[in-house]
Amino acid sequence: MEKRIGAQLYTVRDYMKTIEEFDQTCRRIHDIGYQIVQISGTDLKADEMKTILDQYHLEVVTTHRSFEGFLDDLDELIDYNQTLGCKLCGIGSMPWGIRANPQAVNQFVRDADRV
Image (cartoon, rainbow, N blue to C red; front, side, top):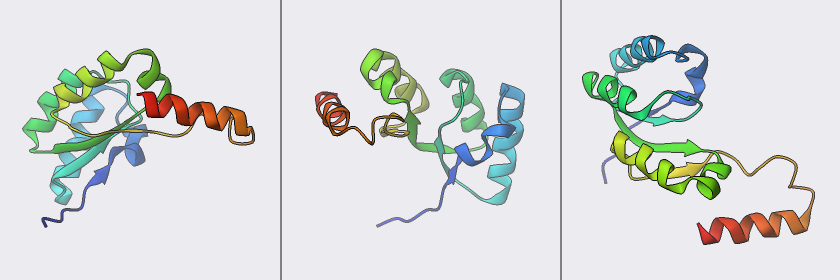
């Protein structure tokens, strides 16, 4: 089994708010020696990011998106991942505020199972 260590770009989200900053951050991530990344915490367009990721030979192995995105616009979420060449997409987090409510947690599980 191949093992590679990747960079979770959420940890540097404050340094990639614009496409220019994303480029600089990817260059640095590449220069450190990373080959794979996880994308989350950005509103940048997938096609713009893909061009830069390819330039620095960074492969996106997973993304994190909001649970609302899975429910409300699954087609966009799928297109986003396909544009990035990424087969995996995770839910960034269970929606806040439902953890103390067993009925809401059960609804979350049913909704997630449906998706």
